[in-house]
Length: 83
Image 1 (tube, helix red, strand yellow):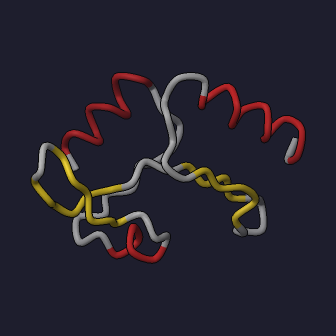
Image 2 (cartoon, helix red, strand yellow):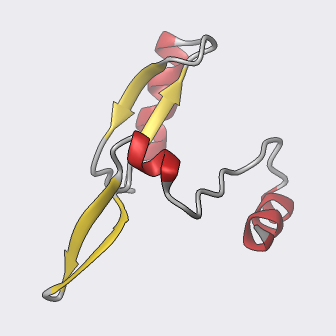
């Protein structure tokens, strides 16, 4: 929680950040996955983005997100579909 507070302050975010220490929400969204890295298996978050509309429904989702260009893609979707 303290890291979230510092991040919010640093970037002056006008919203709260989710802290899902028991990964309950991650499991509901299907992003708590078994991962492999250098032959080692562990559970962690699959990088994903969900756009939630004004009614609280998932308007769009991206799974296994690659960072480069992704923010622009999400912003374009929001502008074209939810603005």
